[in-house]
Amino acid sequence: MLLVSILASSFTVRVGLPLLLVFLGIGMLAGEDGVGRLDFDNPNLAFFVGNLALAVILLDGGMQTKTSTFRVALWPSLSLATLGVVLTTASVGTFAAWLLDVKLIYGLLLGAIVGSTDAAAVFSLLRNSGVKLNERVGGTLEIESGANDPMAILLVVMLTGLLQSSEPLSVLAFLGQMVQQFAIGGVLGVLGGKLLLMVLRRVPLIEGLYALLIIAFGLAMFSGVNIIGGSGFLAVYLVGLTVGNGRIKQQEAISQVMDGLAWLAQAGMFLLLGLLVTPSSLLTHGWQAVAIAAFLIFVARPVAVILCLLPFDFRWPERFYISWVGLRGAVPIVLALYPVIAGLSNSELLFEITFTVVLISLLLQGSTVPQVARWLKIEVPPAPAPTTSFSLISDANANHSLELYEFLVQADGVRIPSTILQNVPSETVSTPQLVSLVRNQQPMVVDAQTELKSCDRIWMLLHPGDVNDVAQIFSQKASSSFLLQNFFGEFAIRGDASLIDLAKVYGVPLDGIDESDTAAELLQRQLGKHLVVGDRVRFGNIRLTIRQMNGGEIEVIGLKLQDK
Image (cartoon, rainbow, N blue to C red; front, side, top):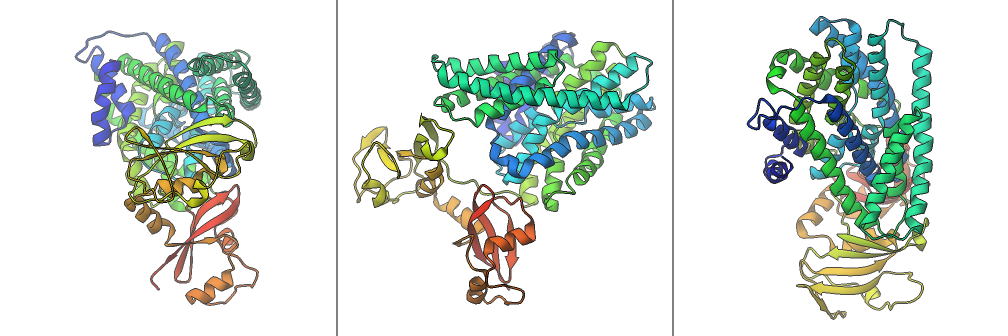
């Protein structure tokens, strides 16, 4: 099944279907209603495997999330991960109870099951769809999907417990459980990540074992935190976040192995969940499931997102996109196994509807992630970047770190700047240094007259803070250069450029402009405090777009002439 799924993935990528849908479909085809005729009916095993797989996926997702995104995405994400899940649960639960003609508590249980976005689906689609989102939107989606599982699990466990007992729901007990889950999971996750980072830096291992050490530590943390009453999902995500943002020499090798293990976890989980379901049973309440999915996608999720993001500086297209990428995946299916394992009445109904909702979400939302981003105009051109990097000196201060980078030349005729060629290796590297030029797998002698060719590979010794500037030299081809100019503008100015000087040059009225005003202040005044690359404003007949930032400070702004 795994072999067939991987081979089939190349076809699905070409037609634009989510890869996770392939694994789910292959599992269904191998099941008792499909060609495989495999009779798999073990929800306990599926639940166990699903939880372990989700822990691995969240660990890898945390490692790929940059803490710099927390500047603009942390509080919006937490709002969606807590209040957003509750609002979605309440609205979907009320609608489902009315539509299915069941008790409200069963409807709320269904709402809690489908109330959270799925980390596996979000991480997979955002990183493999080819779409580059601005930091505010992409960071919000990733952090939300990694942080909303504790709230959804807590709601499902509480509602399942209520259906098993006759005791009324205590609001104080619920809030106490929520605080306990987040507090224990959050504190131990950060502490565990720091401990693992220290171990990785000090314990010598065979290179291939470092990723396995991270997986083993993450799963131990996940299960240990669960045992003592915390949120294992939150803890393992924070372990990954801490390790991924710590500087270690083996970062590149670890990242490659972790990606493979995360894909294996996703594939195994979706195959097993597809094998567990009986496709013919999905038709029993098919139209009700379609109606609930439509209500979730077009009503419940958008309303929850709009309400949760009201206090934050998001443009309306960004809110609509965050709403649309509220993907449902393996997490709701795993949560739907809680009532099945507990032996509740209507548990099969809840599982079948959940499975159908997930299929519709992956088909409708998952296959349109890039198209909707382009339609809403929130896509940002990808910045030039190195193809490979190796950490030589690791330090918490990026100015003291040193890495070896490989750049792929994408256009003929590019020359290496003379300032780089004149540098010679020294004990203290203060400027970029050329290590090697490789052409057709052969090293080349380089001088000031050497013209680079497309597909040449340049190896350079750099501080991490210089990599973006150097990447601009080698990684632009004609089409990408045109896209960057079209998006950011033909000219680049400093963030502290005088606004009154710009107004005089481009014929913009001087009304309301002070002599001390800068271009960066104009952007902040009109768009709010938490700005990201790609934010833009109109200033008379010119458009100003943020091109480069350093933390919260605007460094470079793109300027594009507009029609009057």
